[in-house]
Image (cartoon, rainbow, N blue to C red; front, side, top):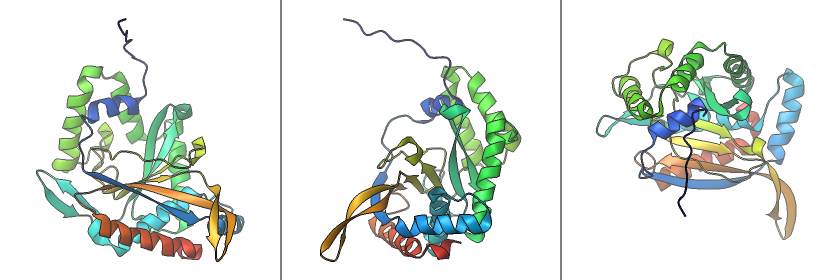
Amino acid sequence: MTTEFTHLEDVSSFRRLAAGMWRKPSDPSIHGSMDIDAGPLLAFLEAHSRETETKLTVTHLVARAVALALREQPELNARVRFWGRIEQRKDVDVFVSVATDGGRDLSGVRIARADEKSLVEVAREVAGRARGIRTGEDATYRESRSMFQKMPWWLARPATRLSDILVNELDFDLPAQGMPRDPFGSAIVTNVGMFGIDTAFAPLLPMARCPMLILVPEVRRRPCVEGDRVEARPVLRLCATFDHRLIDGAAAGRFAASLHRLFAEPGQLA
């Protein structure tokens, strides 16, 4: 029996970009996860949202915590250029993924200097810019989406490679063409909990040049040991993918410890 295939023309701009960007799974990635008692986080979000009249989510907390942890370990806030030159970023910019087109496509919001902004400022910026992306008012997203939707499949790979060279290797800033400089910043934070997923990992984006990708799954009740008792408590299982060229196990462990400390007292993230 011969397997038949049908060429898909009506695919999302992200899917077309992904097909041209990745070659084979040979990148040096390392993965890790950690369970966080979400009780204090949820209580903090509920109280703080009432005080500020701004909808705050676990994703906002994670983005803010990642930014502060990166500020404590600036050596992790780096990228690899050319044939192995490592460069450290001056600012901590966090990219928060956003679903668009009814969930068919994917984009995101880069929060510049996220370590210097309050939790409410981060939440409001994500909400405002996500609204612009979904309504087509965001010019950079509109241009990049239009370009990749119209592009034939056989041009996707050379086009993404050219974009990578222009934006990452040569440091051009081309927002009018949908290619801003360092588009993903220091870390990518993606919420998969909205899909009912409680554990997940994702690959690093070749064009991103950021050292880590953090997935935020759904908060679920899990058995936790409290002294000699086992209790069911809400748990957030954070999952991460790191660029092993920039982050080894020891550095990842220190980063995780910083996150644990910040989440233990959520008021630090305000």
